[in-house]
Image 1 (cartoon, helix red, strand yellow):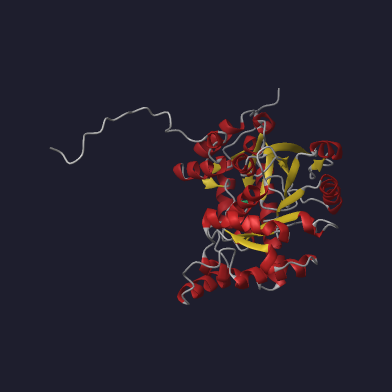
Image 2 (cartoon, rainbow, N blue to C red; image 1 turned 120 degrees about the vertical axis):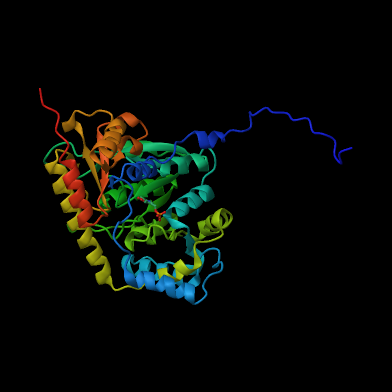
Length: 410
Ligand code: PLP
């Protein structure tokens, strides 16, 4: 006699499905392009990570921290020294007082910082305003936190004369706010457009936030990567906004360490507790030795940031020159490290097909424009390239793109 009675196996599989939330968004197109790029040994100008080394002083600091046995959990909301460095730098740069104890939470990258903030602030049914084209994470962030997204479109430069600037329609912006609006997500300098929001634009957004009692969640991960004499203005520095802004940033782009996963929020004290609770139960904390290295990174001399911006401006100019010579119409970015392009010259009207052709047959990976829009059709003639790459990578991309021929005009 067996010790237990035989079980009757019932095999319905209805519960073996993803949640409704998880079925509302697709896998990341950007990360899929990186996988295809590896599969076809393509030059990867899709996902935004540098192919050049991280600075030695930052790497040495991480190695030293590991050797010094900073290998166990840090304080959940971030090592005190890092929170102090973040607060000091923000105050010194932007003149906004920040308390490391009451306002700074260190997370696993800006990605977790955004998700933890949204989950901490949003109730189902709350509306969240998102500018499009948008960084693709904001859509799933809104769904996972139960938000109802309201989109405001950044108008693409229409003519040769105004080719550079993406603009905001003040009436469309104002119409997006109502009593259900809980937050607005901003990203400046902007991925994918390269737009740097002007002080005037931020003031008009701030006025609406104050009028409708709305929180600004501002992703400023490219704050140091600005060109042509443009300046990054954080919305927290606009009058009346420090108390209603969550500023999100990270080590990823500024110090070329996207794999480290160290980011942070600077929030009004009234919101910090909620963000810290969500962060704690999502991840417990960011990598402890890399937080120590973050302290060293943030104390670097200001010349580091000036050189970072100059080096990216050179890379931007190189990529623009290559893409334009190979018949892409480019929207010149003012900041961040991406170029949005129009692929109309190739007679292409399906960005995904064109991106697949480019990665498979030409050997260059880029991101289909539709992944940045709520209505994919708005991005069907667009492709995004990144320029956080080294000279040999640009040389190789240039060589491969020579295979492309423009569509004959009839
Ligand atoms: N926010 C924006 C606008 C980005 O472009 C990216 C990465 O490309 C991230 C956040 C991700 O940041 P992190 O690596 O700190 O999670």
